[in-house]
Length: 78
Image 1 (spheres, rainbow, N blue to C red):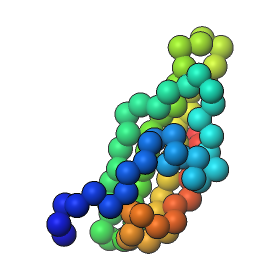
Image 2: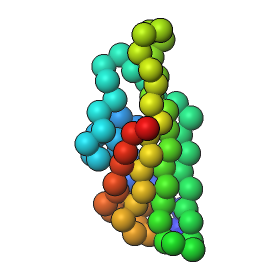
Image 3: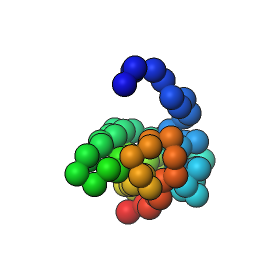
Image 4: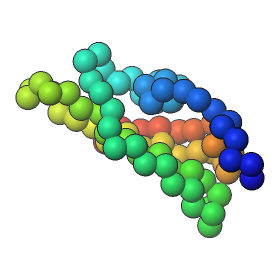
């Protein structure tokens, strides 16, 4: 490992690439990225939110298809 930056994209672009659209007026917060060597997968978690009281926030969860974090991911919202 060299510690070199291999991918640079915004949070919104990351989720959008998986078909998860962060609604207009929402922000994302609390990003977490964890690698589990026992299964060879990356796990990403983030929350989208807005200050509007009538709009619920969501948990955004993504799992990489393999150990390459620049490869394919599958995302869901909860």
